[in-house]
Image (cartoon, rainbow over the protein chains, first blue to last red):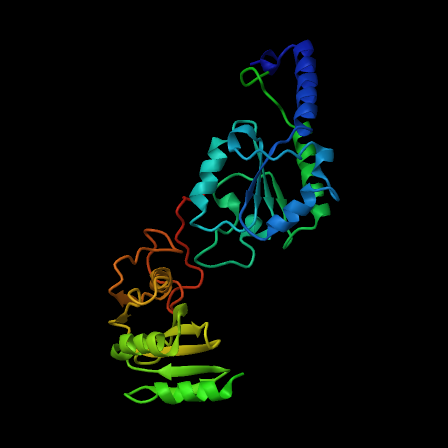
Length: 165
Length: 157
């Protein structure tokens, strides 16, 4: 079989690449975060979103307090087993495309809560794009995480019509 | 610290099978489980211990009887605390509930029941408060495995 038959025409391929670049550029600067804030990392989250560190520079400043209007889920703090069904429900309510940042070591791996109460990392129940460790993470680390997420968004495919285009 | 007040409290609470002492600035009373309601009623009525601070337990796995149940009370008139301790065995860890005397005992006793499995006779609502329905065992008992989890959401592969 000739494998070339399955490839799209060069012009279409060029167009797809340019479309992905354009949409990626647009999406990476319009992240609407949903802060799922459960613990002390919230203090650092407030710090990183307010004037001094200012996530507005990355287009990620406008927290939407409903998961249906947001495309970045920031899980800030310890998630307990009792809280896990709520996190799962929030994640499932978000529309595609959606990304998840695990903010702080508790959301990343459970941190030092290795016991009956805490979920050992939110990636046990939902997929995670960026892990920001630290207890709590410095705002610079969070900004680094957001920038890496932007790189990821800019470099990934953004199908808008079906799977191919 | 009002030493004279503490000493008079200690002397008032000792006797009738109760042992009272002063430790760390509060009066500690060790008593039998069936003397609890009478003692707390006396504390509240005669000594103005109007604030119920906490009820918790201590697990001594090697000891018989296995559990200490510990109550703390505070007097907003005299600004002193008192601690009551009693021992209950593992096969019947039951003490009397204090909900008739202190409304806040509802929640405290639920938590103690969650964590240690202490039963409070007379408390009609011992549903889980910090844990969740379906949680098996009592996590602050020494024989609960340290890393045992009981997740509500199945883990991803």
